[in-house]
Structure formats: C-alpha cells, structure tokens
Amino acid sequence: MLYVTRLGGPISVVDLEQKIVIKEIDSGSMPHRLSFTNVGAILFVVNTGSDMLSVIDSRKHGVIKTIPVGDSPEYVALNPDETLAYVTNIDSNTVSIVDADADKVVNEIPVGKGPYGIAFSADGGDLAYVSNMRGNDVSVINTTSSNITATISAGGTGPHQMVARKPDVEIVRIEDNNNNNNSSVVARIFVEVPDDREEFARGLIFRKHLLWNAGMLFAFGDEEPRRFWMKNTLIPLDMIFVDSSSKIIDIKENVPPCKQEECPTYPSKEPAQ
Image 1 (cartoon, one colour):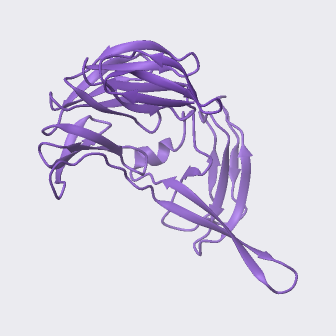
Image 2 (cartoon, one colour):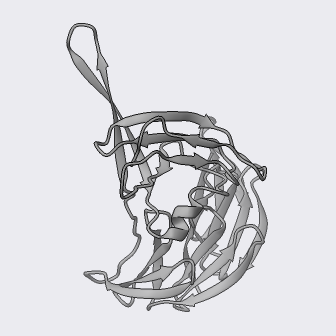
Image 3 (cartoon, rainbow, N blue to C red):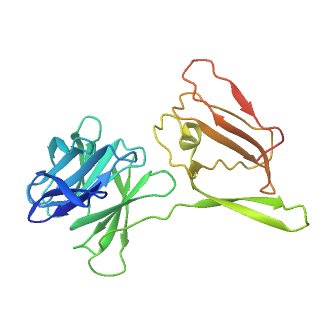
C-alpha cells in the first residue's frame, strides 16, 4: 500500500498491485508528514491546517484518534523505541511530545523559531535534533530530560529536513575456495553505541523491535572473558564476541528472551573486548 497526502484533500490509499486508489482517509485539514511504526501497523500524520496529529490503523485504513498539538504542525517522527512521537509546531515554536501508547501529549518543549524537521541521534536516540526554519539553527533536545542542551547554526537559511547517519561495523568472513583463492563476504551492521553507564546497563532490554541489520556495540577497555544475559529482553538476539584484534572468537545465535527472575548467562569461549 502507498499512502499519499494532498494539501487540499484527504489521504489517498493506493493499492500498488491494482494501481488504484482503494480508500481516502479524512484525517484533518492539510495532512502533511507521514511516519510509520517499524512494522507498519500504525501511521502517524500531522494536519497542518487543523493543528492535529492523527493516529491511523494502516490495516483498516481508519483514524484511531486525533490529538491536538501546537500551531501548524509540520513534521512527526517516532523515537527509536517507538514510545513517543515528536511533532514540530512551526507557528508556536514548540515540539509536542506524544505518548504513542496513550495517544496524548505529555510534554511541550519550546525550541527555536519555526521548527520543522526532526532527527534522532544515531547511537540510540538520546538526543533529538530540530531544524528551526525561521531561526536558521538547530535545537538539540536531551530526550531523557526534555531539556534543550545546545543550539547549533544550520550554516544557512531555512533548514528543513535532517537525517543522522548511524555508525556501522563490517563483519567480514573469508572463504577458502579450495584453490588458494580466498573471497570475502561482508555484512554491514548499523549499531547503537551506549555512551554512559546507564545506557550500558540497559542495553537492548524492553525493546520490542530491532531491524535485521541493527544492533548494539559494547566496547570494553580491556580483553577479558565476557558474560551476557537476556533478562527482560523481549526479542531473540545474536551475541557476537570480538577480541582486541577485531577477530570474532565466539557467536551465540538466536539467544531466546528471558522474563524469569533467574536467567542463564552466556559466556564467551575466549577473552573478548
């Protein structure tokens, strides 16, 4: 399915196989930015003309709820764990934070002049960047405290949309073709990097979704035997242990979640860093 917004009308739902519009959804006046959950079940759309955020069931193609936000909302983006929707309000110079489960505004943050685009930090979403079109700068929001931590020049006038590139690692497997000709197979994994003790301890617990080529990189200061567990982890994970020379020394595949009080630990076969 393809969802198309039109400034002068409802949202069109296009069946890509039949190549026809199968339904129109009246979400509000001047629907603008669309944002799906990772699995595509829920669609968020801002209605610039009616100062509303609409929550749409993408399977039934119907509005679940319409939530009042600030003046002239322009952009909506979900934080990495999809618990909150951030909405920029260009005419009230604020960002509305919406609880994605309760479908209600839980905070309103004053930012710069004319906020428009949103991007989350690539290492887990602890920072949100908001482009201020009329102020020609970028506001940096700490998503834990909801405080503005910095204002950065955009380098020009009218900054719009933004994207933050995620850090990545390459996993290379060398294959011997039995004729002394080696070939390599490369997998690129986009990683989050915890940068404080709280993030390090939290890891990937309580996450409901993780893209197939995404993960978290735990970098230690020394090379020692390591143990991890899956307590309060909701999705199965692969654990890849790497030594100080960046060589993989052990892999635990498809480790199951553990919701019990006592959970098994998974040690590396050799010292890892």
